[in-house]
Length: 77
Image 1 (cartoon, rainbow, N blue to C red):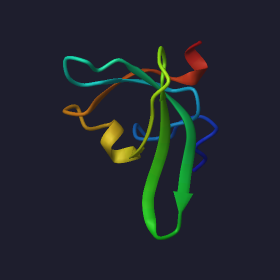
Image 2 (image 1 turned 90 degrees about the vertical axis):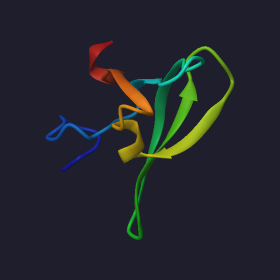
Image 3 (image 1 turned 45 degrees about the horizontal axis):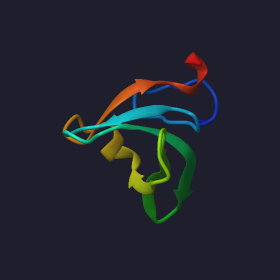
């Protein structure tokens, strides 16, 4: 399975994918980089679309509806 090709499952992410953070001040966040290490679950670095903030979260958190909503995949631009 490749995170940079076509998505075989719903929880795959790639640089350029966009997510909306849940909550009043959510905003849109874009996947900048995917981190895959052998000893921890996959993580991503997110950058705020209209700001200077960044954060690193587990991929599983991106697909938790209480945390984020998937807005679009990079291939949809």
